[in-house]
Length: 82
Image: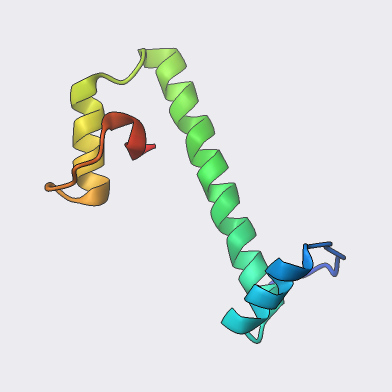
């Protein structure tokens, strides 16, 4: 089992009520949400570093990324891929 640290988090009452409808294990649910957000931020930072070194992504690169992420028939614009 991974090491854990107990912390106190304050959330709006409405969010807590909705969380309790979704899960019996709020700690696990919140831990997964935090992990997902951390991955998102790390990916964003890596993409930014890449663009600083190699230039901005072209429309074609964005279209290819969108197709890979959302499927070839995705009707999303390039800005929606990130």
